[in-house]
Image (cartoon, rainbow, N blue to C red):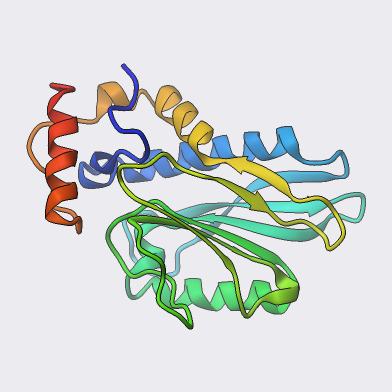
Length: 215
């Protein structure tokens, strides 16, 4: 059976399936990017070791390189709980600053309801989930893609070198493939309400949608 929600399934976060989902979502993002990138670019998956004791000892992320000089152009992060809460939030923010300082574009996809959002100079638009696209040449501002738990994930623009055409990343398509490959329709239990930071109407809507699954 498909995902019972039009967009992100919040039960993945609430039922402890996030680490597995995170891994597969990154893999599907890499595949989607490589299908759309020009021939002189390649997207790779790398991992970094956590320096603190967390449930996930490593974190995966995507790097887009320009060939043949193999120059890092863009980083793509699917934020984990450790990126959004202390103490892991501090090294993540330091890495973020370092990438932008060295002229690397940054795409950050936040599919988690819990934890701190990225700090901006102005309040974020209303939303339950976000994608942030920061171009190195204009690192003091970014494109913000907000959407609610009731909406499908958006298609975002991934920047490359200045002057090169940006590539589209269809997050809705990535989610469909991730849900199918991971068999989350069999793994995720949708009984009972979830305790997540949602408005009362949205929490009731999530519970109603989930109850129709009956798993």
